[in-house]
Image 1 (cartoon, rainbow, N blue to C red):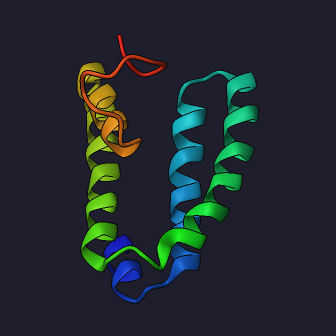
Image 2 (cartoon, rainbow, N blue to C red; image 1 turned 30 degrees about the vertical axis):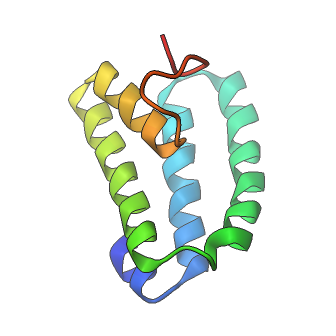
Length: 103
């Protein structure tokens, strides 16, 4: 479904899928306070994403969808290190970076 939305340049569908993905990730952490903070923050960042989306190529958008699929797979497999690395790729943080997602 995401691939079709990318190919159709359906920004509305892509944003909806992205919001669902990040909402599920926040809720999976089972931290209600963090979820209440993260979901509205993601919705606000989606506005910026839509604004900048026009500059992305189809290949870049498809690669972003794939990065999200990889993260979901690591989480489903219970691979914390893999999920951390995948999340950092989504956030475009270099693997050796320190910070909230780093060690």
